[in-house]
Image 1 (cartoon, rainbow, N blue to C red):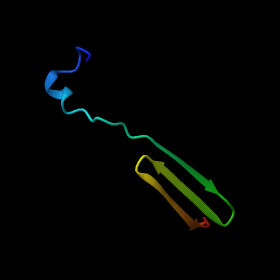
Image 2: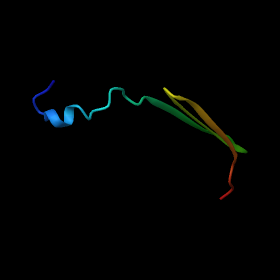
Image 3: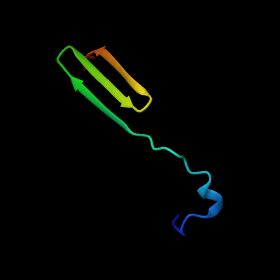
Length: 51
């Protein structure tokens, strides 16, 4: 263990890392959003909002 991390904090460090990936794809009539983590995947298809 590196000396720069105090021993009291070393036990509080998480044992796993969060790994995530995502994509946003915009089409003329809709937006598709997908997010993937180690826990699973979520996605949304929404109507494109005109500005």
